[in-house]
Amino acid sequence: MTLRRSVLFYPALSTERWDEAMASGADMIVFDLEDGTVPARRAEARIAVLPLYAGPHKADQPLRLLRVNNPRTEDGLRDLLAVADCADAPDGLILPKIEHAEEVRWVADVLRPRHPGLELVVLIESPRGIKNAMEIACSTAGHEGPQVTCLFLGTADFSASIGSDLGWDALAHARAETVLAAQEAGIDAMDGVWFDPSDEAGLIDEAQRIAAMGFTGKASYDQVQIPHIHAAFTPAPTQVDWAERVLAAAAADPLGTARVDGKMVNESIARRARRILDRRPA
Image (cartoon, rainbow, N blue to C red; front, side, top):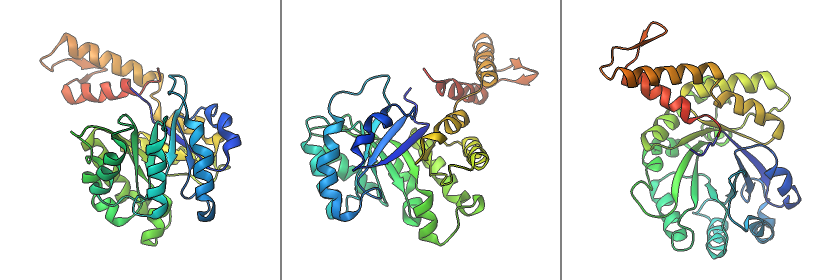
């Protein structure tokens, strides 16, 4: 199972940081043609960054993503056509400001002829996007070609769109909708950035809370945050031990009467155990 616990952002014009990004320890790295590039330099950035994705993805590498501009914009159209024309595309694209499932299917249709295996990570950043999150998450299910693999809540843009702060209460509903939509589609759920790299305690607390909600990862702009993020979304040895004992007990007693640590083991408990084991690093 591909782990998507972390995604680390770099400006698209910072091509000299490619090797740093690849060695960052993040599960996914992304060079950013949208918020990370001023509009006047996006054409320049597109030309500079796309050659870095040449060659197949290797098992010991992070997934190499590119954040394009929204496909409803001119820059977004130019980004998609440039990716479609590449002999070697990124491993995946981050699609920002998505509000409708049709947008995602249209992107997949454009890229299918040349890059059918490309991943799509969909950013939800508006009230309309949250309202349509379920349909967006499931938009490529049953279709050939690029697939949505992760639903990503852009907490900063979403909070700006509704006039809230980035506090827990303000974002609780949007986070819950994102997790439910991702789980319905069987894909990963990514939370937004913790913006203060010096506040380790705040990051750890938030990452642990969103992991408990069902999120599978969190975004970052700073490499120093990656170990804390991975710790929140990687099962502890005690959890792995519990999950293995649960599955062993369930296999030995398929009637659902087994107990582990004095507690009943049924299929729902076994399903939770399997999810824990799925999240172990290879």
